View 1: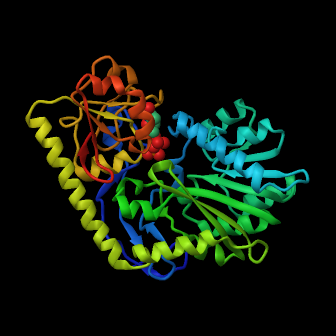
View 2 (view 1 turned 60 degrees about the vertical axis):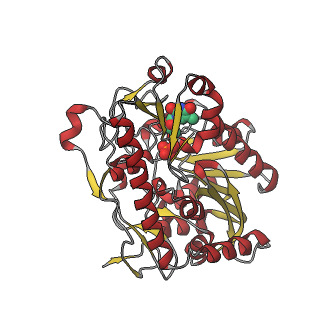
View 3 (view 1 turned 135 degrees about the vertical axis):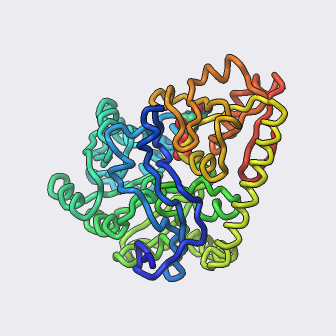
Length: 405
Ligand code: TYD
């Protein structure tokens, strides 16, 4: 029996998505034979209410020197991180020689705003090539994984932090107890840990099961976050919903008793109980919803293939790996995936081995249907792809329901 990574309670998977490759494991045909697979199976802990993966590949297998994920791929996300940085500077930052640490600072997309404002800062980024890109932007970056040990090193060099920030990072870290321990050491008495991640409430409401993949070892709720950090002398003091990644939540955490707990915390917890996020039965229903979504998507794709329609994927997202592999989408269904990220182009998608091509391949010869793998950017994409619609093209989306637009 597996144990909850947070509280040690016995857990078992409420469903399996089956054999799964690394979500960001874009590869060339000569690498197909050595492709890495693991079983993607999420579990719900009925003691601390944390949704988590039972098995996960070693972090070194996922975030290595050639890791393909760069944050600066979307204008809307760049604007979001600028707002996040400005909001922290305006509302949460201490006044005396403040020091900001960002966990998983990627290519410096957020921290560069602190750097520009002349604020002492340090990014912690485990991928060497990504850390190097951040340094090139003038963002002070250390290549490391964050835990109690790294926290001690940072304290020795810089002192305690006013703000520890993280975006789409905390849910990647299996040993969260070590992170919480590190935060409890590194944070100033009145400092804040502020992080955001895809939100379990949105995943359950929208059946957005593609948020579940190797890198996302957790899908958080206010209920679980309060428990996780609560056992390290820390307290959830505010939550702020975000539209990013198809629905995220920002969690603001301080040392216990140092801040007023805002009404948003009790309100989110009440909402989560009403949605059943604290009950195992909710996850059984989620499994049935995933199965229905898969059946509907494959019915649509098989029908298009039978009619000889050209279908192209839009956005070789990490999360689309769960969709292609779980549903059984092949290059017979989807001719190629268009993506603007140079490191993904010319490679094939993990598992399904659908070729990834530059954006121009889509724009120069519109398909009949574009399968929107980057559905979290739908607004931005629909706005710039009016020409595709005008040519008679249709979008196929699968969140919250399988629909043509
Ligand atoms: P992202 O939103 O980061 O999703 P995930 O976390 O699941 O990887 O990835 C967006 C991907 O879509 C990225 O590879 C860039 C690509 N993309 C395009 O090709 N065109 C676009 O217009 C947008 C917004 C994204």
